[in-house]
Amino acid sequence: MPELVRILLVEDHAFTRDGLRATLSLEPDLQVVTEARSGEEALELLEQHAVDLAVVDIGLPGMDGIAVAREIKRRWPTVRIVMLTAHDLREEVFASLASGADAYCLKSASPELLLLAIRAAAAGSAYLDPQIAHHVLGGVRLPETQSPLTPRELEVLRLIAEGLPNREIAEALCISVSTVKLHVQEILLKLQAADRTQAAVKALRAGLL
View (cartoon, rainbow, N blue to C red):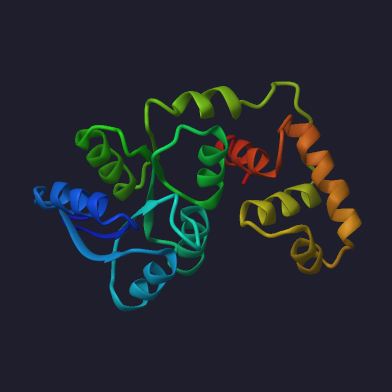
């Protein structure tokens, strides 16, 4: 972990943003260098400020936190991301992990847990709030008898994990959209995943990607 972690706060509620800033300002190894009230503003600020980590509210107006995380990882892959949410929703957990978030923390968590999440993410580790870890532990184990994915299915899965829709996957791989759909069906079946997001997370956690 760097000696000083430079942080971008992305939170549209001023009260919550003030509380986060106050909490982080007490820590000698953490520094809030800039703040954004929307995802669009966050991306503009990242063009102007060097940061190590972004604390992102998942429920932003306009461009939501998941889309923000995906874009940050695409344009600034070394920036670590801590996702904040007020909800314990399974779909949000998987979508956040698939977007590239390094840590996932509930807003109701104690300041100590938030600091733990930030420092873990800054050090290159992953962190899940204890209250939501059961979603991942219960939902991403791969069956021992699972058939391996074909090279083409892995290519499709990598693009799914990057957030590309079927049409863009088809263009990237020079295949038809109907062929992509068939590959997606096979991937979901082999990984025993309910949807594309869960398939990507299962593959990431199992080291397939």
